[in-house]
Image (cartoon, rainbow, N blue to C red):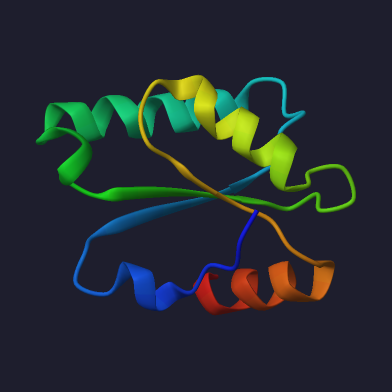
Length: 93
Protein backbone atom coordinates (compact mmCIF):
# COMPACT_ATOMS: atom_id res chain seq x y z
CA UNK A 1 0.00 0.00 0.00
CA UNK A 2 3.01 2.33 -0.18
CA UNK A 3 5.66 3.14 -2.80
CA UNK A 4 8.61 0.77 -3.16
CA UNK A 5 11.99 1.53 -4.67
CA UNK A 6 14.60 -0.94 -5.83
CA UNK A 7 17.06 1.05 -3.72
CA UNK A 8 15.54 -0.80 -0.74
CA UNK A 9 17.19 -3.93 -2.13
CA UNK A 10 20.71 -2.53 -2.40
CA UNK A 11 23.28 -4.72 -0.72
CA UNK A 12 20.85 -7.64 -0.27
CA UNK A 13 20.37 -10.65 -2.48
CA UNK A 14 16.83 -10.99 -3.74
CA UNK A 15 14.65 -13.16 -5.91
CA UNK A 16 11.90 -11.64 -8.02
CA UNK A 17 8.88 -13.59 -9.22
CA UNK A 18 6.31 -12.21 -11.64
CA UNK A 19 2.87 -13.78 -11.32
CA UNK A 20 -0.70 -13.07 -10.31
CA UNK A 21 -2.86 -13.86 -7.31
CA UNK A 22 -5.42 -15.94 -9.19
CA UNK A 23 -2.74 -18.23 -10.61
CA UNK A 24 -3.81 -21.82 -10.04
CA UNK A 25 -0.57 -23.71 -9.56
CA UNK A 26 2.65 -22.23 -10.98
CA UNK A 27 2.64 -19.08 -8.85
CA UNK A 28 1.95 -20.63 -5.45
CA UNK A 29 4.27 -23.54 -6.20
CA UNK A 30 7.11 -21.24 -7.21
CA UNK A 31 6.69 -18.92 -4.23
CA UNK A 32 6.49 -21.93 -1.94
CA UNK A 33 9.75 -23.26 -3.39
CA UNK A 34 11.42 -19.88 -2.94
CA UNK A 35 10.30 -19.80 0.68
CA UNK A 36 11.58 -23.34 1.24
CA UNK A 37 14.92 -22.51 -0.39
CA UNK A 38 15.31 -19.40 1.74
CA UNK A 39 14.65 -21.41 4.89
CA UNK A 40 17.24 -23.98 3.81
CA UNK A 41 19.98 -21.41 3.19
CA UNK A 42 19.64 -19.29 6.28
CA UNK A 43 16.08 -18.21 6.88
CA UNK A 44 14.44 -14.83 6.35
CA UNK A 45 17.80 -13.04 6.39
CA UNK A 46 19.25 -15.09 3.49
CA UNK A 47 17.56 -13.14 0.70
CA UNK A 48 14.45 -11.11 0.01
CA UNK A 49 11.56 -12.51 -2.03
CA UNK A 50 9.57 -10.12 -4.19
CA UNK A 51 6.27 -11.01 -5.82
CA UNK A 52 5.33 -8.62 -8.64
CA UNK A 53 1.84 -9.01 -10.05
CA UNK A 54 1.39 -8.96 -13.81
CA UNK A 55 -2.36 -8.42 -13.36
CA UNK A 56 -2.74 -4.93 -11.88
CA UNK A 57 -6.39 -4.74 -12.98
CA UNK A 58 -7.27 -7.45 -10.44
CA UNK A 59 -4.33 -7.35 -8.02
CA UNK A 60 -4.35 -4.18 -5.96
CA UNK A 61 -2.30 -3.64 -2.81
CA UNK A 62 -4.83 -5.48 -0.65
CA UNK A 63 -4.97 -8.60 -2.85
CA UNK A 64 -1.20 -8.75 -3.33
CA UNK A 65 -0.61 -8.25 0.39
CA UNK A 66 -3.03 -11.00 1.35
CA UNK A 67 -1.53 -13.35 -1.23
CA UNK A 68 2.05 -12.68 -0.08
CA UNK A 69 0.94 -13.40 3.47
CA UNK A 70 -0.13 -16.95 2.61
CA UNK A 71 3.40 -18.34 2.54
CA UNK A 72 4.34 -17.99 6.24
CA UNK A 73 7.51 -16.07 5.37
CA UNK A 74 8.13 -12.42 4.55
CA UNK A 75 7.41 -11.74 0.88
CA UNK A 76 7.37 -8.23 -0.53
CA UNK A 77 4.24 -8.01 -2.67
CA UNK A 78 4.24 -5.35 -5.37
CA UNK A 79 1.65 -3.92 -7.72
CA UNK A 80 1.21 -0.69 -9.62
CA UNK A 81 -0.08 0.66 -12.88
CA UNK A 82 0.33 -1.35 -16.05
CA UNK A 83 3.02 1.08 -17.19
CA UNK A 84 4.94 0.73 -13.91
CA UNK A 85 4.78 -3.06 -14.03
CA UNK A 86 5.80 -3.11 -17.71
CA UNK A 87 8.86 -1.00 -16.81
CA UNK A 88 9.85 -3.41 -14.04
CA UNK A 89 9.35 -6.41 -16.33
CA UNK A 90 11.57 -4.78 -18.97
CA UNK A 91 14.25 -3.99 -16.40
CA UNK A 92 14.41 -7.53 -15.01
CA UNK A 93 13.70 -9.45 -18.20
